[in-house]
Every structure is written in C-alpha cells, then in structure tokens.
Image 1 (cartoon, rainbow, N blue to C red):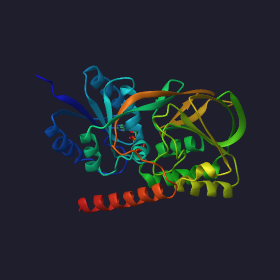
Image 2: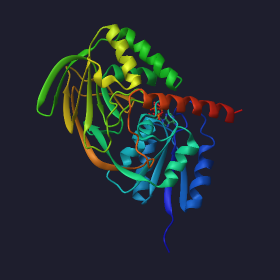
Image 3: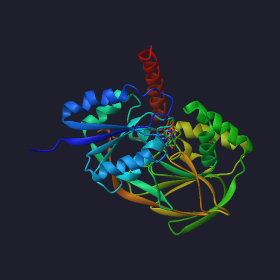
Image 4: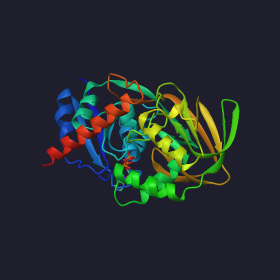
Amino acid sequence: MDQPRRLLLIINPVSGVGDKNDIEALVYTHLEPLGYEIMTNYTCARGDATRLAENAVKSGYYGVIAVGGDGTVNETATALCDTDTALGIIPCGSGNGLARHLGIPLDPLAAVKIIAEDHIIKSDYGAVNGRRFFCTFGVGFDAAVSSNFARQHRRGKFTYIKSAILEYIKYHPQVYTVSANGQIITEKAFLIACCNASQYGNNAYIAPTASITDGLLDITIVHAGTPLDNAIMGVDLFTGYINSNTMIHTFRAPAAVIYRQNEGPVHIDGEPLNIDDTMEIKCHANSLKIFTPTKEVVFRPIITPMENVMRDIFCSFSRLFKSR
Ligand SMILES: Nc1ncnc2c1ncn2[C@@H]1O[C@H](COP(=O)(O)OP(=O)(O)OP(=O)(O)O)[C@@H](O)[C@H]1O
C-alpha cells in the first residue's frame, strides 16, 4: 500500500505581528482530507527552521510549510534546496517578500488552499559567499534598515517604516566595485540589491520584472543622490517604476562579485549579518521546489502595486473582524 505523503508545518511564533493560533487547525482541516499526514513544530530560536527542515528531508517528507516571514522562509528553504521536498509558504511575517512575489495570499486560509492545489514549480535561489537567499540580498541602505529593524522590540510593516527613517537621517553611502558579465563598475552607491524575486516585501519593488525561474539575478545599483532624488526613488519603489528612474543602474547576471573597503553589514532576505569585504554572488537555477498559485503573477507598474495594496487592506480588515 502507498505511504501517505507527509508534510511538516514549521511555525515561527514571533514572526510578524498577527496571531497564528488558528493556522495549525486550518492546515489539518484542509490538507488531511487530501491524504497528507501532517506534523507540526514551533521554532524556539534562530536556526531551528533549518534543523527541522533538514530532518524532514532526511525522512523523505513531501513538503515543509514555513509559517512566518522571509527569515523563516529562508531558514526552511535553505534545507530544501536540491532536494525533492517542496517548500510551502503561509505568509505571517512583516515583509513577506517571496510570498508576495509568488502571489501567495496573505490570508492563511487562501495560502493553505494554494498548497492543497499541489502546483509545484522549480525556482532559482541566490547565494552570497555560500549563504543562500531566495528573495533579495543587499548592501548599503537596505542592510542598515534591516539591522535597525532587528534591534526593534516590535515587528510589522510600521516598524520597517520607522527603521528606514531612523537610518536615513544618519546614513552615508559607500564606494563599491561590482564585477559582472565581464564589466566592472566602481561608484558611490546608496545601495546595491541582488534580487532573485521582485520585492523586499511590503510591495517595495526593487526589481519589478525579476523572475525566479530565469537562472539570473536582477542587480540594482542605486546611485548616491540628493534627498529629492531619494524621495522620487521612494515613490518609484512602491509604484513599480524604479527601472526607469535615472538614479538606477540595473542589469541581469548569473553571477557577480561586489567589493568594498572593509567587511560590514549586509542583509539576506531581510536578516542582517556582517560579512567580508568581497562578496561572491551566484544564481543557482531550478533548484528549489515551491508550492505556488497556478496562475503566474505578471507585473504591471501601478496596477500590480495597487491591486496588492487593496488586497492588504482587505486582509487586515478581515483579520480584524475575525479577531472580534
Ligand atoms: N521562537 C523564536 N524566538 C525568537 N526568534 C525566533 C524564533 N523562531 C524564529 N526566530 C527568528 O525570528 C526571526 C524573524 O522571523 P521572520 O523573518 O520570519 O519574521 P519577520 O522578520 O517578522 O518577517 P519578514 O522577514 O517577512 O520581514 C528569524 O531570524 C528567525 O530565525
């Protein structure tokens, strides 16, 4: 007789600001009748999701579902690369960049239904000095914001806004050299983002047309500019027009090296850390199985961001009414 397909549910209780109490029940109610055998684990500390997902791979699990934000997704997916075990996402974080890119709804029930559809793609992932990223990796201002965010007591999108303002006031751009596609660029940059997916999270589209299945990373260099330049860029970031901003240089590459004068802060999928002055970046094509919606998201400036903001508002209201 066939063994039932097994799914591991990994819940990060501290991600985002929403309550995750009903998620376990939702998953059991909607996926057990489809023949899945489900196990649940809650993370207790950083790194737990990787360890739990590694054990699931060794035990031949069909899928591992990450309940959390991009940090939890990163830790889980890190263990699933180049294996047959697929990643499911129930977005419950502060930014949810990868889930938003893939069109996975923020409503937990709708996200569970996506997993139930069993539509799986093989996506690319990036690596910097051997550390994997699935959404974005960056140096400069975005790294400073993620480091500030990690020091805050509260999570959620409003804390990201607060961290961005606090870091902007004291931020000094640095000189970087980028080597990619046989070209070398040296300049003082506000930030450099290497993107597998299109956004940082919260509908901030740093690489609006990025694809996670093209075997390439979208590299966005934001030149250092005046506060007015940065304000215009902020608008373009949220409306999907950043590629036409004159303060941006963007290109696609399968690999790149970024050099800076000293070791220092970076972020990997929004999680801050310190790494070397030399950053070797590579795209690994078709290496991670992910449960995704059957219909692919095609990005349209203004329209896609507006649709997503409307969905966020609707989702926040429905959560508010459910919690009453
Ligand atoms: N029980 C726990 N206590 C403290 N930290 C934890 C625990 N479980 C996981 N973590 C860590 O929590 C961090 C934040 O998780 P996550 O990134 O999923 O949420 P978020 O930062 O709110 O969302 P996003 O990354 O989408 O902005 C991760 O670095 C993860 O390792």
